Image (cartoon, rainbow, N blue to C red; front, side):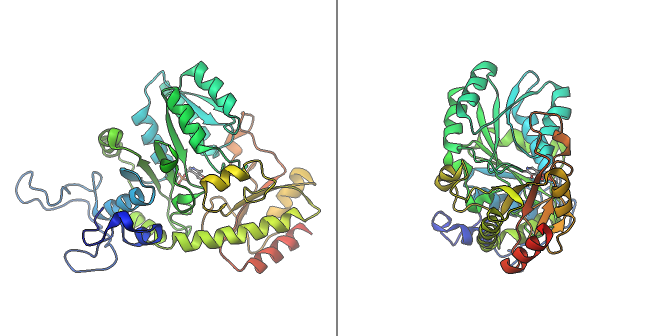
Length: 388
Ligand SMILES: Cc1ncc(COP(=O)(O)O)c(C=O)c1O
């Protein structure tokens, strides 16, 4: 971490978000990390690079700032920034797995992650087995049977907001010789730090809360220890799906306000979940902050707060769910999540269409909300109107 004059070990999350990897520019003193929009670098003689920069696929100072900051926020050894969350996942799997390996994947996960395993990795000999990870005995049985290379977890899950016990899953993975990868996209490092709970690797779609403004697509991998860092750096450069300098800069800009945004996302989501629970058209609300949620106690033990995502099911089935998604005004109908503006979507027909017919299929009466940071009264009025 580049905090020569500060004691980085003692800085809190909020301070690290603004300062880690983001020293004022040594040349001009610019307080904000510049966008180093360059593909290549002048060398002081053959092999004489300045600070190791030779070509921007291999390394770029704006991307380095983002990677340093994310490593600090997740309390990891090294971070690597990619062009998207999927590019990060692809590079990670190809670094850690070989043909013949198997990965235990969640029984409820982002549809694109399932598609990557099901449609891409399988063709290259990396197999997968879906298991509901809230059932630790089922995970233990599957691990004993398949001896997986990786256990891949998401918590809270997308879109059912199930909570997986990261400490327990890490112990289980390690006792079977597997590594635990946690997709921390829904929580963000402000709410949950999987590496501190025993996970080996964290992946993010930084497109979501980390970027936070729905204006950039990106992904990050954070490693707990440096064991696989050289291989991952090699593959990041060799395969080349890196974050560009402007994307890295936008993501860094978003990170500076992550803590305050997440506090407001959580407060708004809690109010929305409480209001939906009282609504006669709603049969169930899936939000880990509700005391009746099956993962509430585990969530309390591993998360600072419960996040900004709320899903709910409707008495009127698929037709009603699709209808509600088309009737909100402030909640914009759209895929993605984690931006300052509220979004609504129908997972079965939108983000999770790729899991139809699989073990990960989602209920058709389900609606997913990404609760933004607008005025909560305006958000509640919008939902009440749409549900009427
Ligand atoms: C939990 C989760 N992981 C990974 C991804 C993939 O990230 P990206 O869209 O940035 O490729 C998404 C995208 O929605 C996601 O929700």
